[in-house]
Amino acid sequence: MAEANTPSPRTMPLRVAVVGSGPSGFYTTEALIKSGQPVIVDLFERLPAPYGLVRYGVAPDHPKLKQAIQVYEKIAQSPQFNFVGNVTVGRDLSVDELRHAYHAVVLTCGAEADRRLGVTGEDLPGSHTATEFVGWYNGHPDYRDRVFDLSHEVAVVIGQGNVAADVARVLAKTVDELRTTDIAAYALDVLAESAVREIHVIGRRGPAQAKFTPKELREFVELADCQARVNVDELDLNAASEAEVADKGNANARKNIALFQKFAQADPADKRRQCYFRFLKSPTALFGTERLEAVELETNRLSGEPFAQSAQGAGVIQTLDCGILFRSIGYRGMPMAGVPFDERRGVFSNRDGRIQDERGVVPGLYTAGWIKRGPTGIIGTNRADSVATVEALLADVEALQSSGAKPGADAFYPVLAERGVRVVSFSDWEKIDAAEIARGVPQGKPREKFARVEEMLSQL
Ligand code: NAP
Image (cartoon, rainbow, N blue to C red; front, top):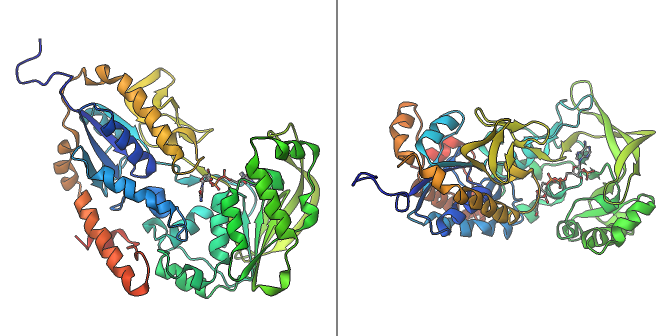
């Protein structure tokens, strides 16, 4: 029988730690709060600023996508929500410490690393990941001090997904097209001096397999001083690609091909910059003595069934001189001490959001978002994914609560202070937010971000 002053499992609030305050963290929080289950959610974030990839990944010239933040701000107003910012789980607090203090821990820390090309010269100065460049122009503290040398006329982007489109578009735009966005001022200064005239966006497979969404590709039609171009010979499709394009469910490929055909007919003369979309080419080596000077590309041919075609080198090699190269070939999750990791897929080992090791499910440990399923889909895709994880968690609620009441974050404030960590609450963040917005006003920008953690903390 429960003692008189012990809350019964039915009224005892479920204490949940969510780790990572990007879209998946907020959608997980929302699903928990909306479930009707008495719950208190502590949302842990390693930076003082919330919103993860919406703040630091979405391109500055895509303000509509950032409107998702308004939804997250609403969720944050719930009395069942508590933000624990500037705390790195895995460093300031271990996953095991969290597991002791909560009924459940949901890891939603995204995919922060990059896939590797695995070619000679990949780490030469001048060869960067898209992540570094995107983080830099978006004011991410990890990338604030990166240096991008745009003094050469040719830039190369490897990969044909939406991140590659973002990188190419930011390189292609004039300063006037970016000036009133929330792009970091220091990045705009460097882009203003850019000598880049040619951007080559290179896909290992063909135009039918490019992963751009047509909306993103169409933006290249509207650039003020950059002409999108395609070599018409590269638009030839093999039979399997024709079948892919004809498939009822593949409207994106048809729209992309129509745009590529338009680019192939473009008049090259009238714009200062040219952005070439190139297909069936893989980088086989990057060359340079002290820094990148050229990329070697091998022409590929496709083989396999429709929707399962892979690229094989056909032995035809060409060299493209370039001064900077961005590898935009997909993200990868990073392991965390105490959490089973699937090395092959770069995600936490899980079944339907329940984290598991070789012995089975790890009680009380869950995951959602890119670190659960891999780096695919748009922001909204993570809502359904988070809801599914929360359904699994709630199905386990009886077992989770069998160990009695849990203290949640209250257990950690003294420990974190002892460890020298300045915890940032949501009202602290609101002060930083207001200061960023005020800084943007004189420049006509929605905000000027603080790109250093110390700068953010100095607002408090
Ligand atoms: P992605 O869509 O998976 O694209 C990765 C690209 O890299 C593909 O073209 C892929 O080609 C290529 N690639 C992979 N390995 C390669 C290799 N070894 N050599 C050469 N090329 C290689 O990934 P992403 O662009 O990083 O985007 C991640 C997710 O975020 C996507 O779901 C994307 O739609 C989303 N996103 C959305 C927006 C937006 O909505 N505006 C903006 C940014 C990102 P294969 O097809 O041959 O594998």
